[in-house]
Length: 237
Length: 295
Image (cartoon, rainbow over all chains, first blue to last red; front, side, top):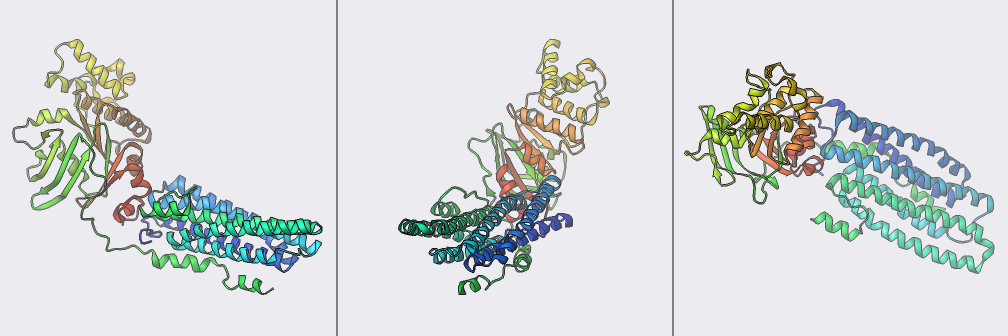
């Protein structure tokens, strides 16, 4: 962590540009995290007003994504960053698109929440949504924390947690499919829950992607598309 | 639903996270030199092999125990802040430092099997094998033709006018200057533009078929287009020659070299593949220099 000396540049303008990118990324992360929390709450509590709020936030998230991308392009063009600066810019541009996708998935959950508020509660699946939702939400918080602190170890933990979420998702899927077979009248409502679970699982994947960018940023190693064990082995090298 | 409350237990916020960066990532002023050069300073069967090189100007030591290899047909970039010893080190490689009375070089320096500091070695012959291009283009006050022909003449590389003509043309072609000067070979070299003069100096250097070409900031006096041409040339020349280049432009080092050596206050801190140096340098001092954090 001591290697990442952002903010010590000879050029104060360069410092400010990097500082601004980092701050905007953290703001976007905070916003998206809140979106996930609100989307879950709107679904679990059948709170339509909150769901609408989640949908409204999307626009803000999209704008931040474009702003950060523009800032990164500017730094690349004007400063030709190298080493940790270069890795920061690359990691940020990738992380923002993951964050934006997390925002999209939250909006999906919120839309499912609105439908369920209209059609009536699903007879099953809330326990799973709450459980996986909590898990995914913690992953997102940890991965953003890891980015802010340049903590590769924590980022690795997020990647490991994603495997658990995938298992939980598959098991929830099995039980909900079994339920639908037993009670076909509930299929439409249970499907809303299934789509929400799918969105949560995707959010977990995106959180993992961001974690992988943190590892790239800190360690300079590309750990995408490999298993957690392989990441660990690569980091030990 | 009680879980909903749990989601709020830690409000996501950017201030906290961003604030932590400052304190934790403050520059570590105690950063020290590594005991040994970090990275890969050595290669298999090198063209030039330098070990434990110390250079003194009078009492002052300018280079401290630098060891590195330069591979055959490799482009090695030497970078570092002003006064770090990179030019001094480069000048050891063809004994240009001999011209400075108070300069004393210690250590083992070899061009293949040849000890560069062997007292029996003919320095003029060495400089034909290890040529040098300087920061400022310094053509002789002679014609373009004679500038290039000078070396081959004094080294007796061409007996007939025909041979000499061929060497001059080949060298100017290799330096990417032939098409621009072929109709005025007998006008003075000093009448060319800065970039052309520098390419003329490169043609003059390669006219004696050196094995190694040393370049000491060859583009610092040139505009971006002339610089691009020289860089292009370096890439082409590396097919036939081994090149060591000192440069203040890190982008240039990144563009032209295979390996990059980072010097700091007379020590070789890190030498690695250029890509590694510019994306993930191993030592803090390298990182600080590459990212512009000195000052």
